[in-house]
Amino acid sequence: MNQNNPQKERIFPFVWPWRGANNQHLSFSELIKGKAFTILYLITIWTVIAILGFASTRNCEGTWQLALQCEYAFWVKNLTEAPLIFLRNLLTTPFLHNGLDHILFVSVLGFLLIVQSHEAVFGSKKTALIFLSSYVTVAPFFAVFYTVGIDFFPDSEFMNFAFVRNWLGGSIGMFQVYGALATVSRKRWVMLSIPVIFELFNLIVLGIDLHISLMHVMATFLGFGISLWLVKK
Image (cartoon, rainbow, N blue to C red):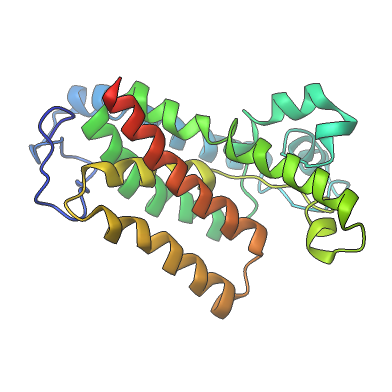
């Protein structure tokens, strides 16, 4: 499967990490070249964990490692308080994770299943673009939304919660890549409905923050739209 001749008969166009777009086995050199973004990202985030440990969404004073990662995480308040740091951190927060479950979710489900499959179909450059663009689209959108919203609803617990913690990790990018991969699915609506169902489960059963679910769902559909636009280009 490749961008010009996708296997549209497949509902879920995933491939094994060691295989290419046409399900062929990749040599070591082909793997390094064909899955370069996936490999580089995984090496980076696990190196960060090895050196700094896990980040925290609230505790920024326990150790210098926590403080450093808090400094480079995404904070909604920085949109107005420190705009330049806000912009810088859009490109650093995807490489920080706050727990083993968090980094395994992004590494295994996100990259070893979703991102490397997209990379096999569309190539490393386009995959990196789709992934990283979520942090200059979805993240700023919600930063503006909460910043404006709290002026209208200053007593809203929902609005205030967005400011009391940071937001980090590769999950937004992972969902955006998933949405982009759905463009080569035989049943696009099936693939696009799964993140919605998944986030409803997270909200109702696991009690995850609504803020996270909203970002994931928006990233999914934005990735789908961006990929359609890029194909037309």
